[in-house]
Length: 114
Figure 1: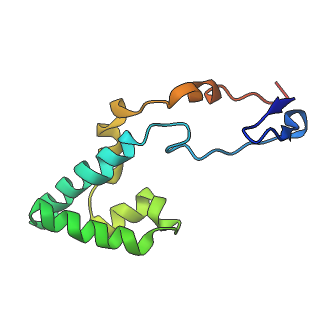
Figure 2: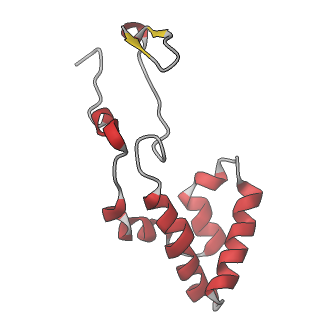
């Protein structure tokens, strides 16, 4: 058995599935920050003929209203709301994805059925 930070025993041999939030848990947040702080505002400004500051303000106001909702995390939602190809922005920034610390060990999924 492994021990967590609080020294509580975790019965890993009885757990079938573990779900982890990737952003900030497994992956460095720089990737998302680059997209939502730089690439999306720039593309949004271009598409809607806004200044970068105006685009950032509109997006930040919109994000504040959505925080804590599932739409906040949906690429389809952001495409619909901004009219920007958000998937293309993610592909453009793909080389920025980095694992956090020892998180790369979670890359290989093991199943009891392997």
